Image 1 (cartoon, rainbow, N blue to C red):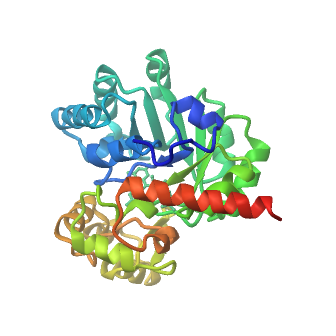
Image 2 (image 1 turned 30 degrees about the vertical axis):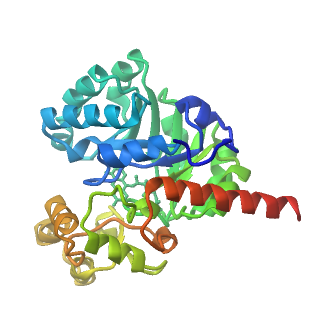
Length: 330
Ligand SMILES: Cc1cc2nc3c(=O)[nH]c(=O)nc-3n(C[C@H](O)[C@H](O)[C@H](O)COP(=O)(O)O)c2cc1C
């Protein structure tokens, strides 16, 4: 079921992925499961199951099969995040075999450029969109033989990169420098921004934060209530001293990390109790949102109440139509 009877926007990315709306829901560690991703696909956009959330091969395969069942066979994507630590990427090749066996042909890569993975994926006919935090990195990734790129700006939840250039600057710059289809993300959670991004030359928007309170997100209700309450100032940047900047919810653990950084602490082990992925998992499961470093961006301010993913898509498209009409009248 699409969020809008007549899809109002057709772009190179809607064509590339065979979707109705130029709205991509980026991979969310621990949260992008079959239910959430299928909801994005069924609303007419695209979603990506985060492979890292399902390190066990059997669990990963089962999640893909569930997603197929929930979308009624409509294509969906998988997110492959490559960390700078080689040892942490060991499972990815096996997961690629599984996703290809299960018929997945849409991949969002992020982190390191997916150079070594490309030949196998391309040979299998996969369409690959690689996410970067700078236009410069997007330009070099475009040379690898991928199908599209995403550029995320400083406002984004998760990793905004070290330069922290905003989406309003990156979008027209990306349009000038890229010939490949591209999506932009970082701070996008309102339909007017969708129109603005398309007007600036983007082929789609990528959304993460705006979806965090969605009904299909599996996190505890207390966490979602915090997301609904949070405003545009509720995030903070941490780990800049490690050149591994994160934008996260400003909570107790994020403040502990910030205090260590302010004190000049360089031993990563002192940070581990706060930044370990298991803490995020606990926060999502128990609703104790003061715990863990929880990726969240500035666009959380647009999540103002409980909504399903389909309702969020419908709202984004309705806001986009208003923005388009406003522009036409000026
Ligand atoms: C809770 C959360 C978890 C995320 N996990 C991942 C991840 O595992 N892999 C990834 O490539 N990006 C991840 N991201 C980034 C999103 O896919 C997307 O790029 C970003 O959220 C877009 O910016 P926005 O937050 O302003 O919408 C995450 C973002 C959030 C908010």
